[in-house]
Length: 149
Length: 163
Image (cartoon, chains in turn green, yellow):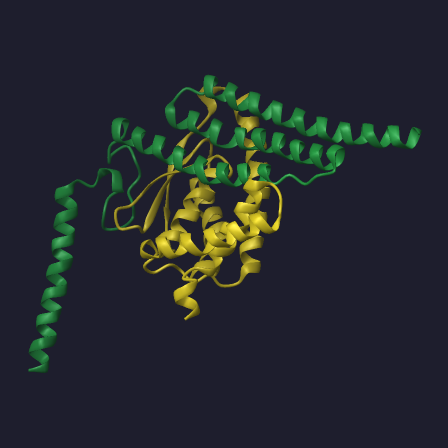
């Protein structure tokens, strides 16, 4: 009897630990969103701190169904996968919008290669580069033809 | 013949597995319907995968996923510590340029996603010719160190997986 009791409470403690961890990280992430003082810094709080926040709840949920109901639940794994796919995409959208509105080629570091950051490249610049590439291809083709006689 | 019937065998397997997860049970019915989805979806979307990368060594993919998962846990603790214990005036955010050796768009996408999920960095932009990533650091005194860590820890492994 006591054995069953201690087993149950150990499982309960394990699930509770994960719930508390997730709660703490969720709270810190939301607090970071309030506390940090510019858009790009704020972006870090929800993309990371909340990942562990949600992850903790999902692990707790899987453990609960495994230990108390005796069934294996896969929904949590799917939520994790979808979260890992969507979080970077949304973060990238917000960062890109921020760069469009508040940054310039002078406020960001150089790319270190021939063309600028995609956000700053205007249609004219892109067309010029593509036209140059086409021109190069055309001339090399002409040269090949000439060489073949 | 097999290639025509199953243009994307990995996608077929993933779709079957995901369908079992969505149904949350494994029965003959879900397996059959998963298999139907796994055959029809790759067949319909094959036109959108003109030259997909060949994935070598599945063990390296598992290794990469485990490393990234561990780094996400570490990243959460680091970012939480910065948020809680650093004053805004002492946080030194800065941009870092990461030159890329990766060529395939899929590999660069995975790298950008990894950077966003891991320690104090968000990937924000890519250069127009796809040869550099613009990464924002929440707090760092050593931008070169951040760049080298990204290149050695993630990009080298992705290069082995994708190219």
